Image (cartoon, rainbow, N blue to C red):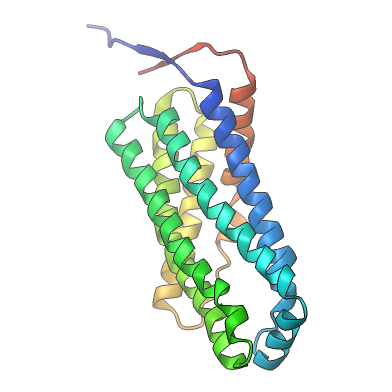
Length: 223
């Protein structure tokens, strides 16, 4: 007996919102950390870092705000991807969403370390310790983010509506973050490097979601 197939529509609104939210996350994280925060931080020099932050405190606080907004958008993306992928396998899709929400929570905890830095500028080493704590907490949180991406890749591969190549790239991005997250836990002074080469799937997902959101809504057939 031939296997029966199920047809269901992919929400244009969900796809569009997810793509735009992911794009905004990339912009906010880039502007917030690399544009506002990183230029004020000198590794190994607590005194200079404290002086630079004190001289550009509004810039530093703006960078922190950008990071907070990115964390909020992560929750929205989790909900959107749940809506898009739930028909494939509800249990796995819900699990993937909770992994991203858990990552967002850890990310917020990490950001609180940045938020208290301006109050510690009178003690440069304490301020530097808070900055280092942010990095460690965020990197450990990448383990949760990695599991989210791996499950999204798995669902996409089985969906019948997401290109398999894209699904594989998303899973590979997850593996990269997993290696970097575990490296932070297991290796002293580990510097995340793998994810800087495997993030392509995330960029491709942004483009795919926006493309799907801009197309006329039509039923999609999935096994």
